[in-house]
Structure formats: C-alpha cells, structure tokens
Image (cartoon, rainbow, N blue to C red):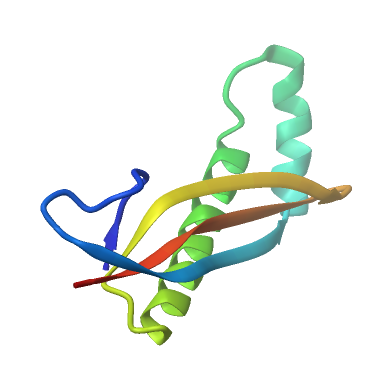
Length: 103
C-alpha cells in the first residue's frame, strides 16, 4: 500500500474511493507515568511517552491501511495524523486519508 501525504500519486491517474481512518486510545503505563513525573523535574525528553505515541501512530496507520485494503485501494493520499487527550492518562491517535484506486 502506497502512503502519501500529498493529494495525488505522481505519474498515476487515480479515482477516490473514500475516507479511511484508523484510531487508537492508548493509556500510559503507571511505571512510565511515575518516571515521567520525575523527568519533569530535570527536563528533557520523556522517552516512555515518545515510545507510546510512536506505537500508537503505527497501530492507527495499520488500521487505516486495513480499511483501505478492504475497499480495494492501491494507495492512500493526503494522510494526516491527529492526537488528543481523551482522559487523564490516555491519548487518542488518529490516522486518516483518502483511499484511491489507480485507473
């Protein structure tokens, strides 16, 4: 599956199949949350959260691709990611784009 964050596929004619998305709500691990609290005292990257969000983006992307494959898509264009806090200690990550078929 070709994944692009532009609105076309260079060298290909495409037809839009529709919006596809993948989402996940991921909670923080208590141990990582405690260590992150300690890290805020000295500053710097909170690697446990970085890893959590990387994993969440990968899962959301896979779910989006699975939805596009079910539609018979060849590619997904105009891909975007979003995230938000859903509740204390949990974040939602969404990946979305337009599933397209090559003509």
